[in-house]
Structure formats: C-alpha cells, structure tokens
Image (cartoon, rainbow, N blue to C red; front, side, top):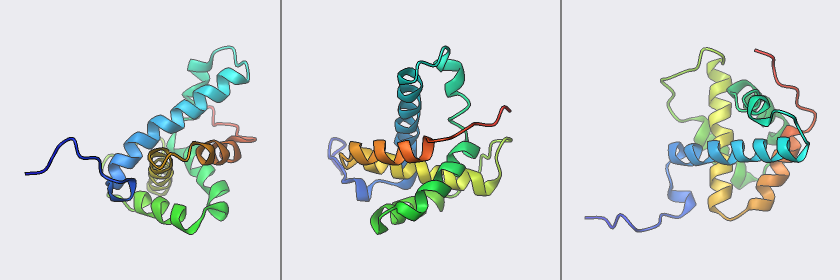
Length: 132
C-alpha cells in the first residue's frame, strides 16, 4: 500500500498531471502579464490567451531555446493520448498545447520559476490572439 502523502519527484509525475498543473501556471502568467500591462478588462482578455491555438504558437517560439531536458518533458506531454479535442483547435495544436502545459507544470514543480517567467515572456511577446 502506497503512502498518499509521499511526494513524487517532478520527473516521475504523469504528463497528464504535469499538464493539469501547467495549465494553471500558464493562466497565472497570462493574468499577471495583463494586470501588469494595465489591460482594462484582464478577465475578458485572458480568455483569448489560454487557448490551444495560442499555446501552440507559443511552443513554436520556444522549442529552439529549450534545453534537452525541457524538450524531453515537452515531448512527454505532447504525446499524451488525447480523446477530448476542443472544436477550436486541431489535434496538432492541442498536442502542442498539452506539451507546453506539461513543461510549465514540470518547471513549476522543479522550483524553476525564473525559467517559467523567461519562457512565458518569450512566448507572450508580440502575441496577438485570434478574435474567435
């Protein structure tokens, strides 16, 4: 019988759990950025940045600068089986977004907040979300 209070190291967490956490980390980064930029309605604007399409575009900006370890975590998340696709994204976009969320969750658990902020700033710079 396993101890439910035992803490698994981030590298042993399932990609789905890392993506679950990473989704919250990404959204917090979005909210913080919008508030710091003085956006008038950050709660409305934030919805435009937490989509699979936007996250997939972010991945394209980040992939070349990831370390090998980060790229491995991203690939683990990207390759998770996906059965519930949103109507607003392709399978490729959804897989990329899940990989990004997995990476952000892993970085958070690793205590690499500065790296989260660095990658988010790179991915968020110049981003204009779709109006859909």
